[in-house]
Length: 354
Image (cartoon, rainbow, N blue to C red; front, side):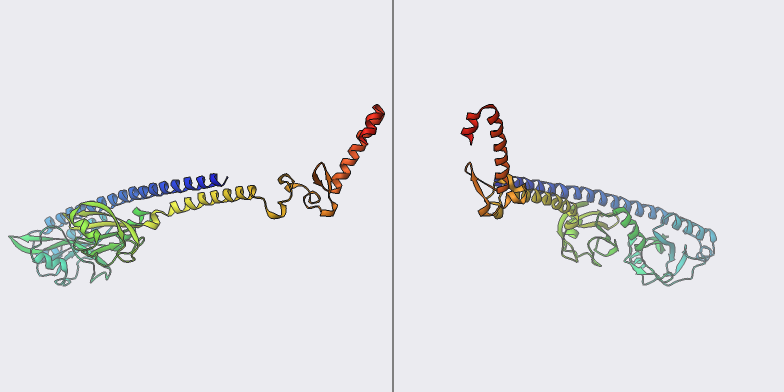
C-alpha cells in the first residue's frame, strides 16, 4: 500500500511538471498574439495620422499665413480629422517662426510660442519624415501628451510643421481593454528608450528604457521577439514580448510576470495535490490499526462498545477466542434450544451435548 501511494505521488509530480510546461507555452502563445495586435494597431495609427497630416499640409501649403489663420474651412478640416482619430487631442500647424498657425482646439487659435518644443527643433535641424516627440504638458489644454509631426518645406526652405497630439491616457485605456485580465503590462517607447505611454496593469516600467537592458538590445537587432528576464523596476522574473517599428523609430513591448503566467497552474496543482494527499491519508488510516483497538479484530471496530472494549474480568474463553458476557449468554441460549430439540428427537445425542 505504501508503495502504491509513493507511485501515485511520483505520477502526480510528473503530471504537474508537464502541466506547468503546457501552461507556460499557453501564456507565451497568448502574449505573442497580444503583442502582434498592439504592434498592428501602432502601425495603423501612425500610417493614418501621417495621411491626415499630409492632407493638412496640402490644404495650407503655399497660402498666405494670415489667410490660413482666418479660414474657417481649415479649422473645419482639422476638427474633422481630430474626430476621426479618438486617440488624438488636437491637429495643428505651426509656422516657420514657431507660432501656432491653426488648431482643431479653437478658431482662431492664439499664436502660442512653441519654439522650445522638441518637435520644432528637430524639424528646423533637418529631420525628415514623421517625428515622435517626448511627452510634454500642452500650453492650452495643460494635459500631458506627445506629438507626431512632419516638417513643411516651401521652395526648399523650412516653412513650419503639421502635427497631431496624442493622449497617453487614451492609449492607456485602449491598451488595457486589448490586454484584458491577462496581467500583462504594455509600453510604447521611442527607439532611444523614451517612454511615451505605460499601461496601468502588469509590471512597472521606468520613465526611460535602459539602453543596455536585454529588451532594448533585442529590439535593436530584431523586428520582434520574446525573451525572459527580470522586470526593469521590480526585479521580478518576467516574460518580454516586443515589436520594433523601425521606420517609425518606435518600440511596442509587453511584460508578464511568471507568477501571473503560472497562477492557473498553481490553482490546479493545489486542488489535485490536496485531493491525492487526502486520499493517501485515508488509505493510511484504514490500513494502520490504532493502538486502542490493536487487541481487537479489525472487523470489530464498528461493533457496539460492549463488544469493542469489554473489561478483562468480564471475558470468557470460547473456542480459543475472547468473548464478552453478553455474547456468551446468547450462545448459551442457542445451545439450550439445540439440546431441547435433540432431546425430543434423540435423547442420547442430547446427553452427549450436555
